[in-house]
Image (tube, rainbow, N blue to C red; front, side, top):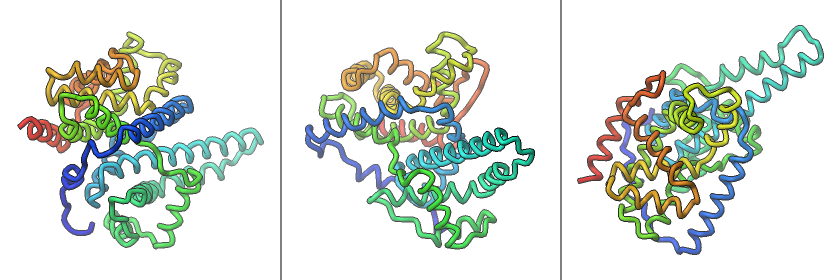
Length: 330
């Protein structure tokens, strides 16, 4: 990769709250709420199936190596998720067509499946590169940088293949890659909390929110599995209950309030109730739901056991979380 890794602290220092008019904030919050409602309604059974910890960590570490903002890493994960779902749907569609036509050979869909596996790393890196182009605050990752990185992993590609990979992702998503991320909801709600007189400063919450959001992405399945069990009061949910719960996994507004509530507890647990009440007033999400989500985030982020399963956070992120909380409280 290109040179030594630099810390991404500059983005945290430059980020500021309280510079936007209330009218603009109200319009932006309404737009996000409408986007979120549409995403929840359109949630399909396969969504979320490619947000695996190893894939997410790969994207996070690559974004950090290339000195990209946190927003870019989340955007890249969401682009990759949508792209992979489209590819998986295409493979299933081809298989159904050939089965319907009673063809014994399934060369077409098998070839698609093999191609998807063989080019996965290339597609992943293309998603990061595309995400970097969406942000005005980031440098655009050059093709040379990408090719050098792929070569360091043993993948030899040409510039033409790299451009074709980007185009493949764009076409699969109908060029709709400016996807909403949970970070946008977190930062908008922090902006509103600042105007509403929240006792915990937005900047202090922001730093902790970024760390916890990383952890939620990495521990996506165990956190949401514990939420599902809590919501149905049963340790062994049925397949149908799991399928109905998919919409909750795509509810970024719910995720954002859970992240902020958990961050508030870390920063100043005495002010936690006030923050949660503010969040309930802003979003209309029930206090119990906010409390349940924040509890799940807090217990899983420190490596707590869930019924029948143990999951711990990667050591380097655990250290970062502790460091962030400690430095913010000094």
